[in-house]
Length: 125
Image 1 (cartoon, rainbow, N blue to C red):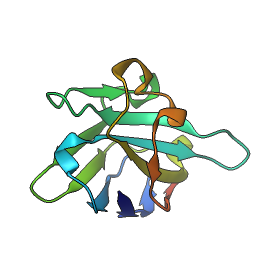
Image 2: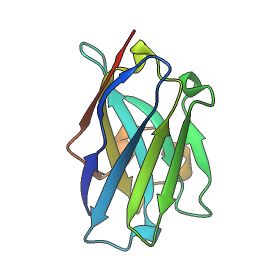
Image 3: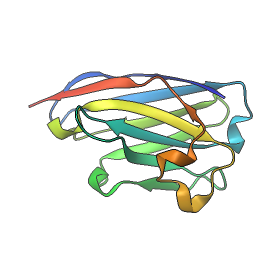
Image 4: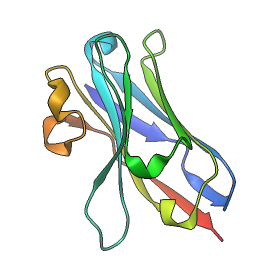
């Protein structure tokens, strides 16, 4: 599947942004989808994921209820709604997907076969 991420930009601390990731070339409902991020000088880290079976969602601890991942199978798109943004949320955000991912690996970037190009999110204080 090909993934195209969009929606990044500049936000002030406390503000909101919504990231989108459009998929083509696959049966989207069969895919588990995740969002990861990478800040300068840091490793890529898990942010959120939506499991293909039943739509259960999973979040990194640092999200603390501020972000919501949602998957629209009719539009072949996964979203990441981010609120109460903090300067430490500044990073390049990547969407990823896999139809063969096992649930125990949903937070592991190595389990995802397809990746979007990344979209920059910058949060100013």
